[in-house]
Image (cartoon, rainbow, N blue to C red; front, top):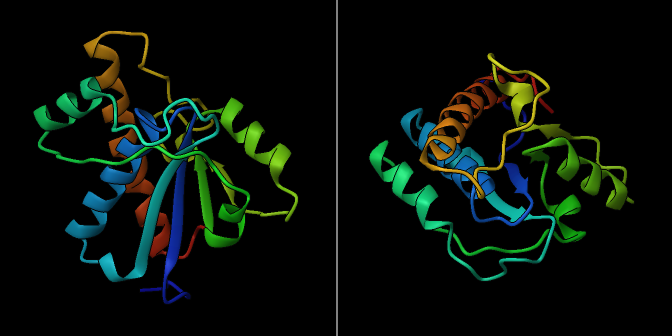
Length: 162
């Protein structure tokens, strides 16, 4: 396995940390566990806004994940400048959140990506925020994040990212 680090730390970021980023973290962990790479990755998720600090993920997102065979939980937190030092890779769910991170990036952290940079069906696009939509939006986000996190892991395994 070409990973050069004993531990690769990956942070997933969206706006409020109750829909997209905690789901991305859970799906990435699922793929890591399926590939038996758990000892090589540390993950977390957060939001660029302080709307939902301490809140559990949106129940509609969790219910959709259950329908797809995935159970997860998380307590919302806001991004901290310390995260630039702690994480090797920071993955933003959309361009607005990436821009927020870039504006705070005083440490010149060079590994801020869009989640869909790893989506074979939508490179460079945003992961849509399902918060104000219906169940179909949560399924669409699940599918996007499932593909994207799987590809991210493969690229990390092959040393193509970092």
